Length: 221
Image (cartoon, rainbow, N blue to C red):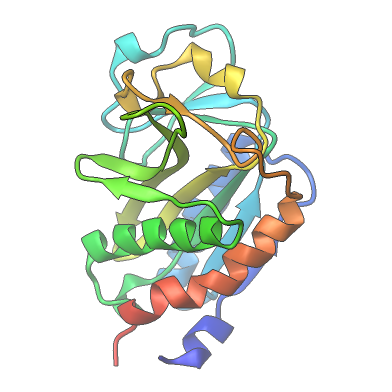
């Protein structure tokens, strides 16, 4: 494992909600700068005001209440999702030239990153074939699984942007305006919904500590 690769990453933390347009503009510029070699790779930790985003596979019928919150067309993969206060969004801007140039492995590393983070709070996250993201079985409801983290990525010239969103303590009722990720047979959950009360700062610490564990195997020798 090349520790210098991790040390070179810039870790940014927004101290106030970030408008979605501002986040996209930043990612676009940073991705271009990373490719040009004029800026370091970056992980940007933000929260957004309440909003919906539509990925490249979003279906119009999955936007149940289009007037509830602003709707933004996102360049990432996936369908409709919600962002808002109490949800940790991490925008991941990495040059995959240094991480194996394998998009599938990159997505799996994002999922593993979330799973390892949840394990720090004694919560068992799982992945499912055909359903991108991280899922938590609902105790007492056989076959019921709720989504606790969404993943949506975009890659340009092998530089990634967009990333993950992990539900810490958002208002889960805000998901009612969409069919999250086009999946109606399962629900959404959060750390708080699972009975885990934890400040965002502790979640950030866990994410930072587990990142090398999840992404170390991707590094090129």
